Image 1: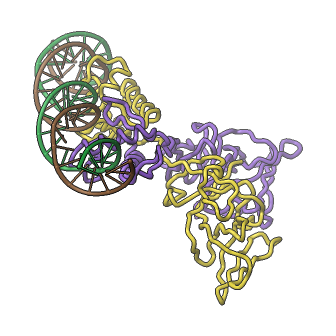
Image 2: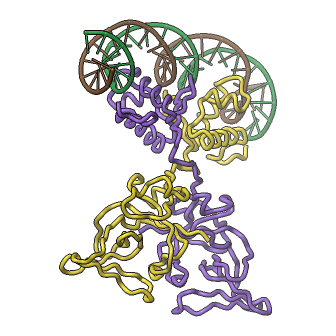
Length: 209
Length: 209
DNA sequence: GATGTTACTGATCATTTGATCAGGAATCAA
DNA sequence: TTGATTCCTGATCAAATGATCAGTAACATC
């Protein structure tokens, strides 16, 4: 036998992969009989043998007696929270209103801190292309009403949401800068008619090609 | 009763939360008896009543007869696969060698197709900044040895990995274009000493601020 | 008061599921 | 040849689990 001491045989690997895929698809491990059916075994004992072998080789954990008590040791998956992708944002309405949710994306803790205080926006327009933020990108935004100089914020000017770099000016005025030189800055003065509200600051970005 | 038509009562919400938390922690839904034990019920029928109510209100899905056949409808979590972030890539060595793995990120199916054939790279250098790919970004790459004109590829030139836009030229030559005008294109001719290998094409991008 | 809903206990039954026994066929090595 | 290992069928038993019935209590609405 040339099989390494803790390497599965081909058949055993098929069983292991079936369990991983089942877990990924169904959110729970399969039963012994589901494995047998999935791989075409007529007997549960065929599965039992493979599970015992995989356990010996340290590739599986089992919870004896428990239904679906099978856990792949080096589980390549992790539970992450799904975050809503918001569509139009309008002033005066709760940002998390259900009709705003367009889609959901999985947010790695890697990308987002404070899930409950964050949301996701799809970028429209190329005003921030100088910062590598392109139309169609998804940006992660942490909700907060204040920002520091230079942070990229999502702001509501009157009734329109926009993504810009935040730069406070003297006298309580605020400048919102685009990073695409084709767009000029937007200045908001305290005495202005315009109403500025900071919705949050950008913490991460997703793009799919 | 002021309860909205499809809102759970307080007790029902407790049951729903227990199921969500259990799923998050254990990677599978609880059994009816595990719910009863977790919430201090002496009878499985207490749980059955709540599950029926939650199902009526559209908050649960059930798979009748199946063990752990409970699924929270608006599950805020999803199983995603963890993908290795590769460090240095060198020719002649298996790309997935363990010593290459620097970190892991959760990859949404949204971003990646074909998990097993993909990997993640951290971007160094600003040669692709014109395409919104900045130093420090993480890009998702699907492994394949051929590419189509205009796709962004990860290529190995002799012993160095690089990210560029792929443009085939006449006569079997290949041009690799940077998108930052400060960098010129790299042309590889068939008769050249240089050895070009396409490692894969970019399918997605992550950035954290 | 009558009615309906929510929220349980306690018990029982049927099905699903895990575990195990007996054995057969194929492969490989000594 | 013998023995070890893998890989499977077929059958059976016991435990885990889902489903259901009967009944009690609290509470709100009409």
